[in-house]
Image (cartoon, rainbow, N blue to C red; front, side, top):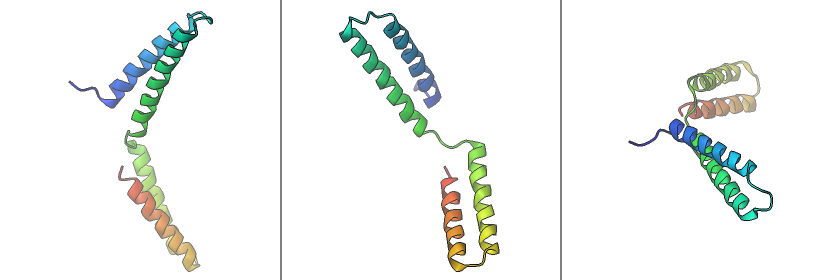
Length: 101
């Protein structure tokens, strides 16, 4: 059975913590072991960050973007200059597209 992203993040954080504890208890003179432990912690940190970047937006974030998009469309109706209307419409379209996930 494949891990979900949240399960993998949780596992990687536990492994990273374990390596961190071992790193703290390793002698300063043992540079090779410390370098290996540091590289393992860095590798897990990088993977956690990669997984977090690919997680979809949450429910409130999506609806917040949609509300901001509607507010910008209303603002486009209310502002005077054509360039401001165009800017509001373009920004509203971007936020609406971004809210899709």
